[in-house]
Image 1 (tube, rainbow, N blue to C red):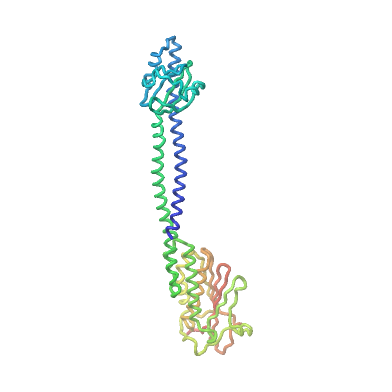
Image 2: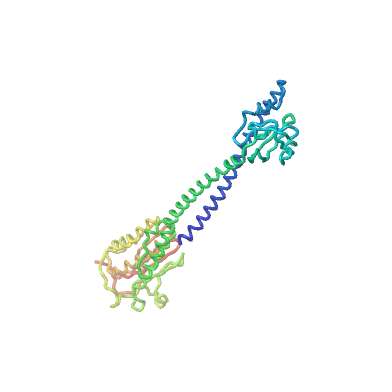
Amino acid sequence: MRARILIPILVLLVVFCGVLGAAVYSNVSSATVRLLDRQIDETLRVLELEISAAQGSGANLTTARYQALIAGYGVAEGGVFIVDEKGLVIADANDVLTGTSVASSAWYEEARQNPSSEFSASYGQTPVYAHSVLVDDKLLVSCLPSKEINDLRVTPLYVIGVVGLVCVIIMGVLIYLLMTRALLNPLESFSGQLRGLLEGREIDLAPLRPCPELSASAELLNGLLVRGSVSANAPSAKKNRSLRIRRGQGSAGTGFSSEPDAASSGAGLPTQTDSHPPATDFELLTLLREVFEEQRQTIVSKRLRFSWLVGNGLPQNIVADRAQMRAGLGGLLAGACAQAAPGSEVKAELRLFSLEQAPSSSDTSSLALMFTIRYSGREESVLLEAQKGF
C-alpha cells in the first residue's frame, strides 16, 4: 500500500523537478550567452575606437599598425583578427590566420554584407563563436572557442541536477513522514483492529488521532458495538423486559417504543416478573457520573458541548437492576457521542415519565424514568423502570 501511494508521488516530484530544471537551465544558458556576447562586443567596440582614433590622428594604418593595435587582445584558442576587402587576414592577435585568405569561408560573404554579425567559424583548427563589425571597409572579428562556451553552459546543468536530486530526496522523505504519520499508520492500525470488532473488542482510538476521519469512524463503530451488545444482552420482549428504546430524527423522534399491543392500548411499562434480574438500591447521581466518565475522553477530544439535565422530583436513591440501567444509559450516550459532529451540542435529560402514560400499578413506589438525548438534529430515548430507594 505504501509503495502504491509513494511511487506516483516520487514520479510526479521527479517530473516537476525535471521541468523546473530544464526551464532554469534554459534561462541560465541564455544569460551565459548574452554575457559572452557583451564581452565580445565590448572588445570590438574598444578596438573600433582605437582604429578610429588612429585614423583621426593622420597615422598611416599599415598591416604592421593594425597588428600592433590588436596585439594585446589575444585569448587562448581565440582572439581578434582583421580581414581586408579581398578576404585576406592582414592582422591576427595570435598569428594563427595572418596571411590566410578566408574569402571562401561560408561566413565571410554574410559578414561583409552587414555592419555587424554573429557566426560560427574555424580559427585554425579550433571551432569558435565570433562577432564581426565592418570598419573602414575592413572586417574586424573577435571570437571565443566554442568549447569554452559550451562548458560554461553545461556547468549550470550539473548544479541544477545535483540541487534537483537533493530537493527530490528531501521532499520525498518529508512527504513519506507526513503521510506515514497522518494517514498510513492510522489506516494500518484501523485495518488491523477491524477484525477485533467481530470478537467484541472496541477499537483503540489513540493510534487514529492523527487522522480525524478515521478516529470519528472508529468512535462510531465503537458506539454501534456497545449499543449492539446492550441490545443482545437485554431480556427479550417475551420476558417483559424493562428497557425500551425509541430512535427518531427531528420532531418525529420523541416518545418511546413498546410492543404493538402496548402502543395500541396506551400501556407504558411492563411490570416486574420473576424472570427479571435482581434489583439493588443505589444512588442515581452516582450512576449518572459513572456513565458520563465513560464518555469523557470522547467528549473532550471531539470538543462536544455536553449538558445533562436531571429533572425535579427524581429520588436520590432508586431500586433497579443497576447493571442493566447503566448499560442502557451508557449505550445510548456512547452512540450519541460517537455520531455527533465535532464541536456540536449534545443534550442529555433524565426525568420522571408522565404518570398518565405510566403503567397502572398498585405499588405507588414504582417509577418510570425517561432518558432522552438530543444531538445533530436527532433524538433518542430510553424508558426505564425502577422503584424509589430507601
